[in-house]
Length: 62
Image 1 (cartoon, rainbow, N blue to C red):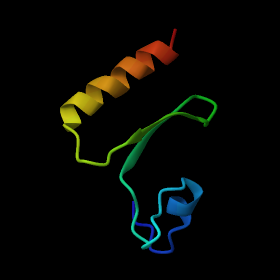
Image 2 (cartoon, helix red, strand yellow):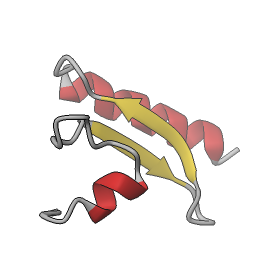
Image 3 (cartoon, one colour):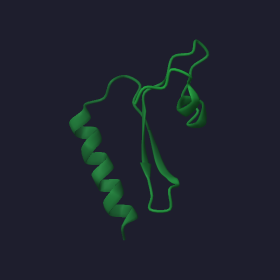
């Protein structure tokens, strides 16, 4: 998503002091609330990240 005005970045608190966004992903529940935040700093293995998110979805669905 393009966010040239940094509105979404500010709302999700992921804009650094230098104005660049931090890499994060979010798991948002059915009520529209952030259930989990994932700090993507360090460029993790995205396949492992996907597995972690799927496990968290399963856990929240119980």
